[in-house]
Length: 292
Image (cartoon, rainbow, N blue to C red; front, side, top):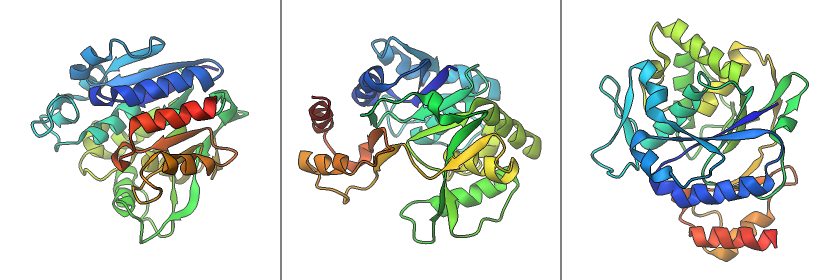
């Protein structure tokens, strides 16, 4: 069973994405193809990106929905993009979420394995192992979202209530967010069909009525609260050890070593969020130390 490994990226992310691709070549097993989703104005920068990857222009994906990505005036050089002309402006991380959802209507692989460009794989892994018979493992951390979350989780939950026609949500709520997650392609297509049937409009326009959305929460709640878990097996074991906050570890190579030592046995990679501020050279060095 071939897996579609999906990474949304952009030109300024080139070196982080290069490190991800190198680690995939070393650690990712089985039958897979890598889809690098980049905006049209970044395609020119991606010519030297991983030869095994399929560089998919965001314009080709979005054009069927009547929306085309474009560089924002506030952040030149392709670091961010919006949707024009009928949608509210979206930052680059919004558009990256939409690309991953949209890809489901353009591929034939049964599994979509989303891997953020901040991720580095440190252990061997075959994505086909995420299947248990005809059911796919769904990352879900039960009751992990409370009133004091350090992000916009509550707004994301409210958005998914409206988008999916469910809820209202109650706390504590389940969390489905991680930087290494698997979706069923057929379920993702069913999700987009559900949104369009419920709202009577293209799914992109329905999603971006608010800037506060999470594609992971949308997919996870669709599986659990609309499909009632059909085709999936929930697991709290996230595959990625993620460094989300800049105050979690010392912001130097010793802090990164400490962070990696705390990987759980079931985790296959690390995700050092770019906004945390760790130097990429330090990340590469600690990865090389581990491989030695």
